[in-house]
Length: 435
Ligand SMILES: NC(=O)c1ccc[n+]([C@@H]2O[C@H](COP(=O)([O-])OP(=O)(O)OC[C@H]3O[C@@H](n4cnc5c(N)ncnc54)[C@H](O)[C@@H]3O)[C@@H](O)[C@H]2O)c1
Ligand SMILES: O=c1ccn([C@@H]2O[C@H](COP(=O)(O)OP(=O)(O)O[C@H]3O[C@H](CO)[C@@H](O)[C@H](O)[C@H]3O)[C@@H](O)[C@H]2O)c(=O)[nH]1
Image 1 (cartoon, protein in one colour):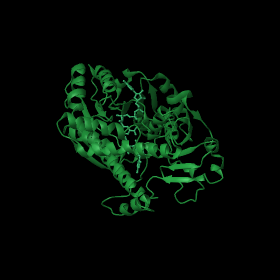
Image 2 (tube, rainbow, N blue to C red; image 1 turned 180 degrees about the vertical axis):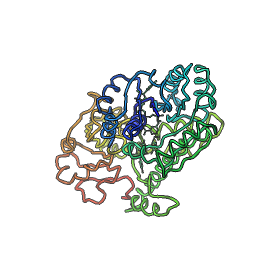
Image 3 (tube, protein in one colour; image 1 turned 45 degrees about the vertical axis):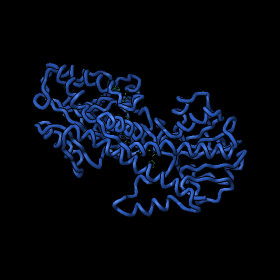
Image 4 (cartoon, rainbow, N blue to C red; image 1 turned 30 degrees about the horizontal axis):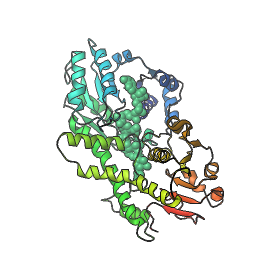
C-alpha cells in the first residue's frame, strides 16, 4: 500500500507524518520546494506540538518528501490537503484544488493502477460533483466509481493537537458512492482507527458536515461572548462560573464556552464566511450565522472603545499587546483577532509593542517595522500606557504587581480573565466580569 498526500500544511503534514510513523509507505508532495527541503530534513515549517517528533519517526521509515507530482502514479491512495483560502466575497478560492487535481488527473491517464483520491481540504457542497469530478474524468479519460475512486474525507483536527487528532479523530467521514473503492476505504480507516465511528454518506453531505461542525463551534463561542458582554454590565457577575456550570449539563457540554475577544484562526472565520456566502447563493438567508459573525466582529470594537475612553484617545499612546498567536501553543497568526486589533489600533496611530512566546517571527512578517517587538513580558510592559491580553499563554499567569510596576499607566484589559482571581494593583478590566 503506497499513499500520497498533496499539500504539506497543518493537515497534510500531520497526516503524512502519522501514516509514515505507523510504517505506511508514504509520499508527501508540495509545490513549495523550500518547504519540501525543510520537511525532508525533519524540520516542520511551523510549530505544532509533537509534529517534529512524529515526522522524524516517519523519516526513519518509508517516507519520501518531494515536489514531483509524477510520484503519485504508483500510489494506491492520494489524499488532497491543499489550501482553500477565502476570496473577498467570502467564497472559497479553488485555484489550488484545481491545479493539484489537474496534475493528479493527468498522471492517471493510461495508468493501470486502481487509485482512490480523497479530498481532505474544506470545500463547499457541490465542489466534488461540479468541479473536482469533471476535471478528474476529463483528463484521466476514466470513469469515477469504475476506474478510480473519489471520496470526500473532511478533516476535523485542531491546531495544537493536530497529531493527537490525526491519530484519534472523533469521527471519520467518507462521502461518495457505494462502490468497491468505498469498501476499500472503509477497510483502511477501520484498521487505522479501530474505535472511531465511520460515517458513510454522499459527497454533498460530507462536504456540509465540515461546515456544520465549524459553524456550530463558532456559534457556541459567539453565544458565550454575547453572554459575557451582558455579564460585564451586571456587578460582580462572572462568565467563567456561568460557562463552568452550564457546561455540566451534558446537553450543552463544557467545551468552546470560553469567552474572549472573538474566534480567529485559519478555519472558523473562513468557513463561517464561506457557509454564509454559499447559503445566500442558494437562496437561504442565514440569519443565525450572520448574527454569529456580527457578534464576533463587535467583540473587538468594544475593546477598542474601552481603551479609547480610558486613555482619552488612542493616537500616540503606547499600547502593549500580549499574545498575537490566534490561540495559545501555536505560532500561527493567520486570521488572529490580535493581529486584527493591532491593524485597527495602528490606523488610529497608536504605538504598538507586542510580546508572544512563539509567534513573534510570524507577526514580523505582517507588520515589519510598524510595531515594536519585545522578547520578554516585562520589557513589553515597560512604559506602556495600556496592556491588552489577547491570547491565554500559560506564562502570562506569572505576571504580578511587580511585573507591571514599570508600566507608565497601569491599565490592563484582560480578554481571557488570566488575572481575574489576582489582586492587581491596576485599573483592571476583564471581559465577562461585571464591574
Ligand atoms: N489548519 C487546520 O487546522 C485545518 C483543519 C481542518 C481542515 N483544514 C482545511 O484543510 C485544508 C488545508 O489546510 P492547512 O491549514 O493544512 O493549509 P496550509 O495553508 O497550511 O497548507 C496548504 C499546503 O498546500 C500547498 N499547496 C498549495 N497548492 C498546491 C499544489 N497545487 N500542489 C501541491 N501543494 C500545494 C501549500 O504550499 C501548503 O504547504 C484547507 O481547506 C483547510 O480549510 C484545515
Ligand atoms: O471556547 C473557545 C474556543 C475557541 N476560541 C477561539 O476560537 C478560535 C478557534 O479555535 P480552535 O477551534 O481551537 O482552532 P482551530 O485549530 O482553527 O480549529 C478549528 O478549525 C479547524 C479547521 O477547520 C477544525 O478542523 C477544528 O475542528 C476547529 O476547532 C481561536 O481564536 C480561539 O481562541 C474561543 O474564543 N473560545
